[in-house]
Image (tube, rainbow, N blue to C red; front, side, top):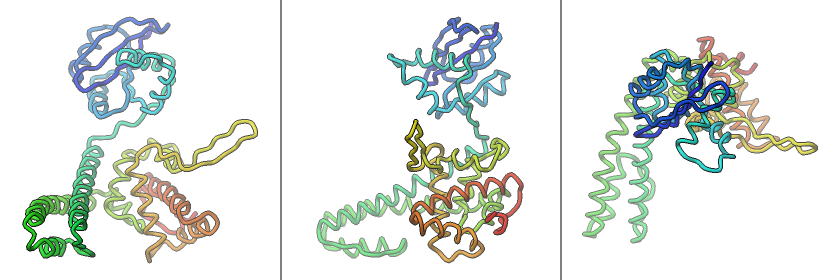
Amino acid sequence: MEHYAGIDVSLECSSVCVVDGNGKIVREAVVPSEPGALIGWFHSLRLGLARIGLEAGPLSQWLYAAMKQAGLAVELLETRHVRDAFKAMPVKSDRNDARGIAQLMRLGWFRPVHCKSLGAQEVRAVLTARKLVQTKLQDVENSLRGILRGFGLKVGKTTDRSFAGRIQELVEGHPTLEAIGEALLSVRSVLLREFNAFEKRVRAMSRSDARTRLLMSTPAVGPIVALTYAAAVDDPARFRSSKQTGPHFGLTPRRYQSGQTDRSGRITKIGDAAVREALYQAAHVMLTKPVKGCTQLKSWAMRIAKRAGMSKAKVALARKLAVILHRMLANTTPFTPAAAAA
């Protein structure tokens, strides 16, 4: 008889449940959240495990890759589907979650998700760290402006080079403000240096990656957008059609249909938020800046803007860019305005 297993992954230990083909619980245990411990525990069972499921999460990709390499039939489950399947569960615990995942594996009521390659994870880690430093840098600058504004000192428009000098000029003669300004400007100096280092690293990564250079042939698509999209897609072959990328990244409208009711709402916003943001920024640049080589795409989006508004036009163009960029990756061909318009 075939057996199925579910793993509820936690930081220190994971709850594991094994059921048979009839849904009867065969074994349960709490195992350390380490690949070696989980692999050893499953091998000690000496059972024919048809499927092992674990919910996607921070540790899941690491555990999934190691278990897959060890020859176990492991599946990575989409978090949203698992959460919705467990909504009727009256008592939520790690043990019950493991039991529920095991039953989902037995019944086949799950949607597997793609486990990104190590290279894609490294690119995403660099982009995440860059975004974090950029956010903190903006927070420090905005905090300085807010503190000084309380004393009637207005910073006004500045550049990266003139910001520190302007702050020092305003706080001169105020001992308390001088101490605050010196401390926060020191923090800003470190953050600015590290952010510039990340910028250089990102540009070097985009130049050395053939797929990123291919995507950057698209108007309004720069290093950040290209790296974000390429890392999120990872393997273009996992999409049967380029049109699937729009729903995958949450760029299609919600729809509710029941009887005589049929409503369309805002976009679903499921999937990778960083990709949605990057594609929307590219669409915004294409529609608001004088970008060459995208006349047909821009005209198509402007026709939508006339009847539905600029915001919806930008979202529609972002969705179209997702399809175009995937087709470019799948065919390894650069951007062609006529093909993109078609």
